[in-house]
Each structure stands twice: as C-alpha cells, then as structure tokens.
Length: 340
Image (cartoon, rainbow, N blue to C red; front, side, top):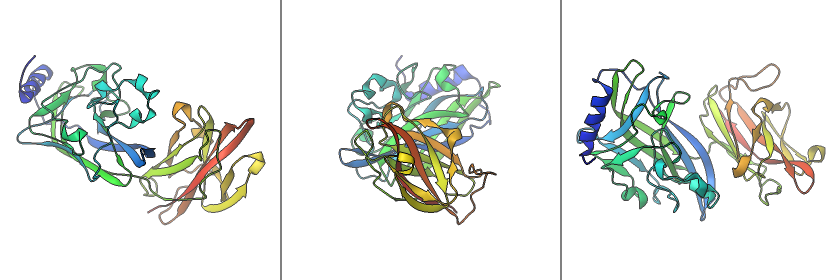
C-alpha cells in the first residue's frame, strides 16, 4: 500500500474508532546495560516504554506530524551506538546474531512492543533513519512506526509497551518527544501528543574494592548501580563479566569492610557489619554473564526488613558461584550509594 504517513495514521484511526479524550499514561525509561566496553567505548543502554495501566489497552503507532514533531536525540557527540548486524527497528533484529556478536544486544532501534523480529509485524513509513545511523538523531514531521491493530505486541506487558532501545556513551543523556496512538479496552481511540522523556544513561554511586579477583571467565566481575537514589525508590543493580550460567545473589550493608577469601572463596567480601542477603532475588548469569535485580529500598531484607533513609549510604556486592577449575565462589567489586 502506498500512502502518505499521515494518511496511514488516519487509516489506523478509522480502523480503531472515533477519537476521544482518554489518556495513555505516559513514558518511562529503564537502563538495561551499563558500561559495556565496545571498541574502547563504554556503552550504556536505555529502553523507552509507553505506560498503559489498562491491560486491555493497546498502542498502535508512534508518530510525528507537521503540528507535533517527533524527535529523539542525545548529548553524545559519537551519536547512538549502532551495531553492524542491527537495524533501524526491532523488526530487523535477528536474535541468532547474538551468538555472532553479543554487542548486537546493545544496538539502537525503535520498536512497538517487540525487542526482536520474532512475532514482530511492525512497519515504518516516512521516518528518515539516516541521521540516526550517522551520529545524529530522529526527527520527523510526517512519519510513523506502527503495529497491526489487535496484534499481540500492541498490548502492555506489566503495564508497558516497548517503543525504543537507545545506547550511548555512559554518562550521556538521551531525550525526545513522541506522539502515541492507540485504543483503550473500552474501544476509545487514544491520541496523546508531545510526551517527553529524558534519561541520564549511566551509573550512580561510587565503586570501591576493585578490580575484583579474576573469575573463570578470565575477567574481574563488575557491579554497577543505576536508577533512583531517592530513599524508598527502586535501585537497579547490574553485575556483569561473570562466568556464564552461574547463580548468585546480592549483599547489602551500611558498613564497608574487607575479608579475603571468606569460606574458601576465590574472591573478597567488601562489606562489614550487619549484612543483608537478597537471596529471594537469586539470579543466574545466563549466556551473557550478567545478573540484574531491582532492589526495593523500602524493605532491605534484614530481620525485620529495614527501609533506607535519606542521607544513608548503603554498600552493595554480588556473591556468585564459579568453577575455577573446581567448585568455588567469587565476588564482584562493590558500590556505595548515598540516598536522598
């Protein structure tokens, strides 16, 4: 079908029903990778989601028009990270490529509900991705990316629909403004304009006690923290450079310390005092050698659970199993986070 992008948007509107004042909740960002070294560049990755509290609602299109432009940009002078195996949209991401180049997971792209080509029927019309692939951003006054109405990727998972993945040099900012088009569970068309987002893509806190002792991967396991430093909010901990397919859990304490090779471990524990063990969030490093958890800082698992207070500094570290060459364990370095 040949049509102007805004005509296509109008066709979508006709398929979905008459427009009304119902609202899509907004946008949120989530950092999914921190400080991954790619050709000497420390790259961090953020995903952008539309939030829909109605589980029966659907998001059908992300667009810009002559009245309400769509724009995505970064402060990074190197632009968005683009992998040679990647694509402009998630419909071009073949997960088989992850084994060829694991950094394909960091590629920058736009999406509508899907993170790769599996089950992905999204299309785009009128969006110029040339600048996006050569150090610039995305700007359109007559472009759209969209999914077929009522297809599975349109519906929220845990209240969210993925619309972009953006990777830049750690410490840089990504931002943008988009217009969202969809339908709520009652059949009312949603058309919400000029929704902004902005995220500083990088770690929070201060690392110490590093580098950690080498593990069987030949590397020192690293720990990074991201997200909010407001007491009571969720803090994301990302441990990487771990041995593959090994279990581990995070530790937390208000006291720093140093004990070499505790219990025969090949690593060092860098916490002291009363230590909380986040065993209920036991993770596996999987094929990427990474464990990620979101810590509820309103309930650090001591006995009884403790809420982090403004002004407090908490220290975090990951303990993990390893085979090097026999069965053993090790630790990441540690990170100290001061909460507001």
